[in-house]
Every structure is written in structure tokens, then in C-alpha cells.
Length: 442
Picture (tube, helix red, strand yellow):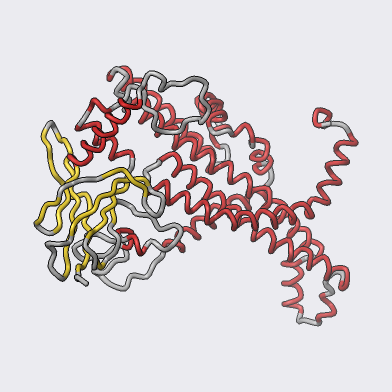
């Protein structure tokens, strides 16, 4: 039937569905709001995990999902409120009919003013209906906009990582190709953005339209706009829908600005940790990770106050740690880098020729290199770095070791985790983590 869209019966069906769509809107809004509020904690949790593990692509997906959830919740809540008002207005219309200004018996000044502003109760009901229908449609259109923007950002990242910074490609060709692609995507993104905020200005001017069309055609595929293009132009050909769409963008900006406003109590005390010499961060102590979204950001010990015979030190693993290990021991870097997203399906045994003995030998070299890179100090005393690969209470993968407290005196101490890094063929040692703690022997 969709191919026969000019058929009169099909148009009558659409008109009938259009009149009854409010029921579906309310059902979908209700289920969507419930589902979104249920999904929010899980999305925020996965976002924290991705941030702590430096999983950039997972983090981007999480941000998109979170932004989409907030947009839908905001819009659908307003939609449900306006639909409720619309249903109430219909019920009142059934009882009271239209507004009888003469019955109100106001002075002419007020009567004329109200007549010019309200005009008719039916007009009011009709406008509420229009607002509800447009708001419901634009909610999902905005999600496509968010996805489109994300695709462009990811495209820049992919070009930078897999072309410009790809050491397996020759430097000159990769630089030329990367710079060309970055330039094309940048110019195209600018054109699309300008065309969007001016509501099609570039398409209206003859010479500009000729320049813009190739970029428009390319970006219609890159941003998946061919999926929602009819919705966009149906909004743009109507003054009422234009006003609604223009109102929502400033509304979101105002919400973001208000949400960013925070009261500062001190010129020196800040909630964000700047140095462990004066601040304590709960993410450095295992026993303070009580919330579901609390994760160790870098390194941790078991508690602020140590009363036992040992300190458990845990260093979180991330991609940067492995890159540093490759810098100090290039022989560990495999020809086939298996990091990143991969399917769990296996059509052949790629590790067939790799013996378990060889893998164990490489794993031992891996951890030996890690222990060489990282140094442990408590105050001025150096401790042997004897880390092993482990998983902490938050299921974070990392490196774990234990330090004796036998030589510690009562009071405050500073645990410093240092690491080596290579700069212009020189090995430099820097502080990687500073964790203050108090020791009191039982």
C-alpha cells in the first residue's frame, strides 16, 4: 500500500490514523519514559566504566545514548503534560462549550483584549493538539541529529588514528591522505552546519548551491540523513513547526547552562582533587567504593587508615599502560594487534601455531617489563615492585601487589607510584599516583 500513496483510500486511512494518533502517542510516551528512566543508571554505569578504562569508542556510544535519553525524557515529559492539558481542555469543552466573554461581564478594555488574545476555546484546543503532535515527532528527529553529529566526530577520530597516526603506512602518503580527508570532512561539516542553522540558505543561492551539492550528497550518507530527510523538510515547509524547532535548541542550551551552575564555598577548597598532598580522593581507597558507579581511576589501596601488617596496592590497567610496555620492550608488540572491538565468532584457530609455553613466556616478560617501569615509594623508602595481573572488587582489570608496614611509624604517610617513560631516547621518571594514608599499629 505504501507504493500506492496517491490512492484516495490510502490517503483517507492516513487522515483517520492522524486523528487517532494521540492515543498511540500517549502509550508510546508512557512506556518510553518508564524504559528511559530504567535504562539511565545502566548507561551511566557503562559510561563510568568506559571512562575509567579509556575505551574511547565505548565512551562515545555511552555519551550518545545518555544524551538521547535526556532529550527523549525532557521532550516526552512535556508531551505527556501537554496531552494531559489537551484532554482536560476537551473534557471542559464538552461541559462548558466555548468561552462566553459576555457572561464574564468584564469591562470593554479587558473583554476586547481577551478576545484578541484567546479568540476561541476551540482555537486553544487546536493549538495544544498541534504542539503535542509536533513535539512528539521532533523528539525522535533530534535523536537522529545527535547520531549524525556523533558520526562526524567519530569520523575525525578514525582518520586521525587509522590514517594520520598509523605507523604501518608510509609517512608522506598517510599525511597527505589524512590531511585531505580531514579538510573535506571539516569543510563539509561547516557547510552542513551553516545550512542547518540558516534553514536551507545554501540551497537557495544559485552559485552556493552548486558548491554545496557535492558535500550535501556525501554527508547525506555519512550522517544517515537519507533516513529522516522527509521529516526535516516537512518541518521546514511550515512556519508553526519551524518556530517549535527553533525554540527547542535555545531551551536545551538554557538547561545545560543552568545545570552547569554550581555554588563555590571557598577560594581554596575545591571538590575536585588537584593534588594528593592536600586532598583525599575516595577513588583511591577500596573500602570507600560503595556506590555502583564508583571506580578506581588510577591506583588504590585498601583504606585510608592502615592497621594491619600490609598495604594492598592496585594499579588500574588501560591501553596507555600497554603502550608504555611496548615502548620499553618492543618484542612484546604482536604483529596482529587484537585490541579493540572484535567478533566472538571464530572460523579458524588463529593461535594454532602459538604454543602455551610461548604465551606464558611472553606473559612473564610482560609483567617483568611492567615491574621495571613502575616504582613504589612510601615517603622516602623504596619498595620492590612485584605486581601481578589481577581483578579488583569492582571487576576492574589491573596489577596488584602487597607492601609490608613493618618499618612504618604511626601517623600520616604518602605512597607514591612512579613510572618511567622514554622521551627523545632518554628515560625519565614521573609521579603516576600519590595516595596519602595513616598507619596505626593495632
